[in-house]
Image (cartoon, rainbow, N blue to C red):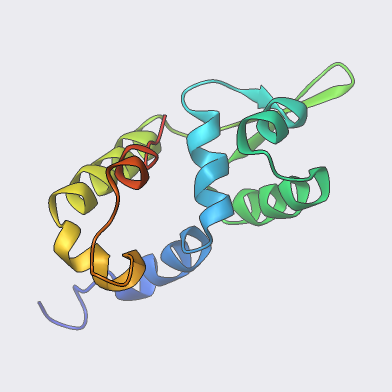
Length: 122
């Protein structure tokens, strides 16, 4: 792939935003629904200040959109395809566990079945 056709310049900022686990948790918590901040807080178990901080970064990156409904702000994925992309990455990561064990395995290069099950998006 030539440098001109390589998507690195386009994708690098997006992957930088997605590299933060709490941001991925927020995207997965949204799923295909628009949700108020309180629902996101309950789903992710993150403090309100953290959720608000990460939502701002996700919004600025174009990975979520905000909708005002009365006195509440609801957050949504801008396109349901984003959830499908995250689920595809999850499936790929699940199929390549030997690579992941080097990153987050126990001392014996194993990821527990429980940890594998908790890698859910949507």
